[in-house]
Length: 188
Image (cartoon, rainbow, N blue to C red; front, side, top):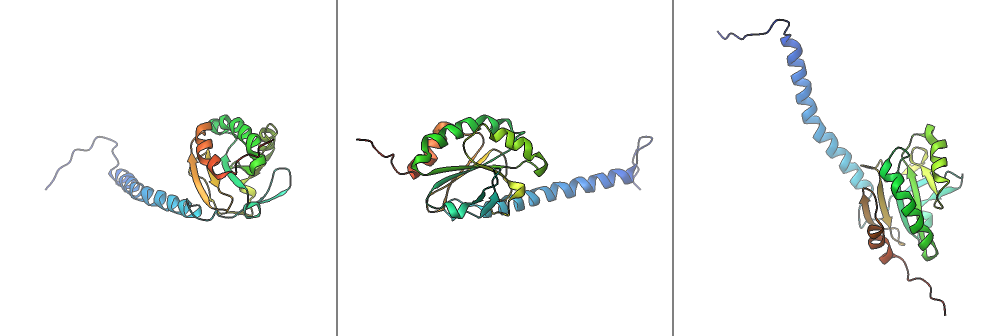
């Protein structure tokens, strides 16, 4: 016979339920995370053709990633509530303005809720590159980003070349994008 001391008010059944829930959660979390990462990783893979991205831009014009083949494309996932996202946007804008004549296109993909469209439009008024809402995309083969900011670089043949996670630096952009662009035209 085994005797256990239980403090007054101790509910052994509740403790067992909590322990089982914790154990199930502990076992399920890695599986759920692995499934999410695996699905996201399959959506866009380095060295593979870029997934579909079809949506209406904030200005109402259509955007289809496949239709801009021939351009190097930066697909930047961001959110209005994301401090690092907002901090890198001026850098993206300067980089876009400096290299768009070489065939660079940047599209900002806001992961904000559809109800936050007005705020997204307000933020994007300061920038020259186009943007769209991921929630309004007809097709988003990239899937939800693992984190924001997250930036994908697609070459002119439509192949994913780089994924940059965390806030961008000018050096990281130059290393990832400049080798993919044609040399700038020289004036004589």
